[in-house]
Image (cartoon, rainbow, N blue to C red; front, side):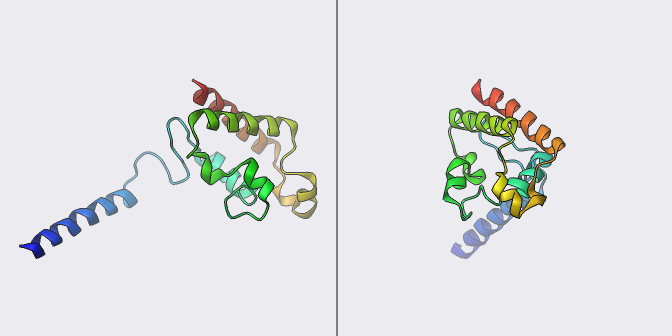
Length: 132
């Protein structure tokens, strides 16, 4: 009896895991969600290519991690997420990211005008949604 019960539990858990990892739930792995916070695929592609290297929990620079940690963003309160989105929009508007010293070493990480526009539009939109 115990063996049948254990088998049933394992079978049920396995089916949930298969469902969770194979079924398209309408959001991609590139989208984080907490409340209204989402990162669309195109935006995430730019973030991964141009921003994530310095703004992640394993990055070398403590200052860049303290300013923005993409992995920790979804865990913030909606008010704090809104503030981060406003900060991102401001930095994009100023053109101060990535910093000039970094771009001297890695010019391929410079944001194009279209990437800047995409990130800025998203950050402003998210700041508005999260502030409501």
